[in-house]
Image 1 (cartoon, rainbow, N blue to C red):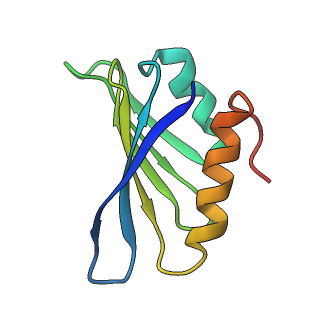
Image 2 (image 1 turned 60 degrees about the vertical axis):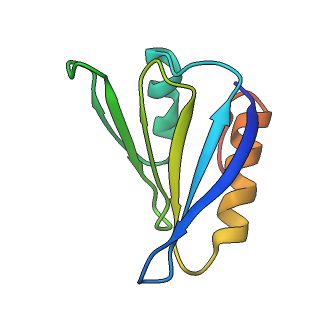
Length: 99
């Protein structure tokens, strides 16, 4: 699963930033479950459109829908550059570990 596009959506009042990432393949259950490496996974697979959310230890949040090819990533006000690089590395190396 590779990132094919990233685009900034908005800045929040608290200084955090929201980006939308597009991928070359849809979110499958296996890929969603692999996101546990990024933080706490909330996965609602019984919803009409299976929703997932990751809450990372450094303020990162990732939200998406199973079967879709995008997700929204919320970066905290500080440390965005490091987290952004971690996200890119996670997907570029085949959903590996985040350092």
